[in-house]
Length: 264
View 1: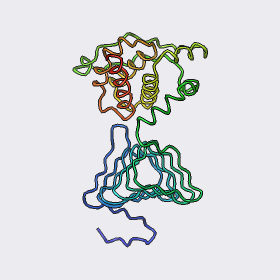
View 2: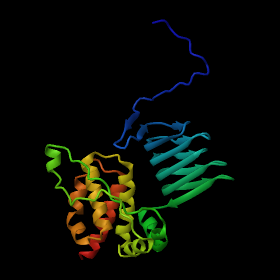
View 3: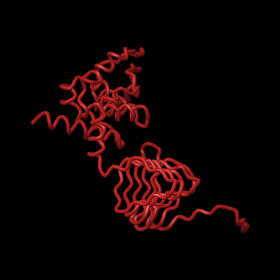
View 4: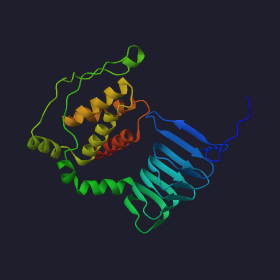
């Protein structure tokens, strides 16, 4: 093969020794590198991590990530949407935009014209705030109760691991807004927020048919307010979800918190 002369305009990607680049169960890219990490283009990520350096998001980049972790500074020049940022410092430069739910940093710097939304120190404070405005959240048209066609279970051992729940109607079920609001008020706040997380995770369709069926069953128990059956089965059902995502884990924690408190 003849040697090719690269143009100075040709972009070059250098992957340092020790860097890990993987795709998770949701199709999101996870990048872990020992040094600095610079993101120049927009994209969706699971985890962005710099073990010993900093992470910089360039002005033209619109980045969405579940977690951003670095030993030094997280510089945002473009746009960042993240569930959690863990870094020594978070620096938003001029005109930068960041929507961060949980922030674990020692220093925070916000430039002129920059915007920061979120910034909770932990999930407990986030839940407490949501609890204070539970009525307002429940009034939002986030979800409509809907029927769905019964998912087919795979054959073999995986099918035997999950007992088929009660059949769901395939036709869409419509509920009057007044009745829907009345049903929502009957569900304790931890379980209500757990239902929101599970509904969102179910809509992503990132799981296999068995895991999707389990999430559907959890949603059905919550929507029907069958707390007795939910309390007896939620641990077993959650244990059957293959590689559960962050929303499923948080929903499990909320159910665990509620049922642990009510059993005392």
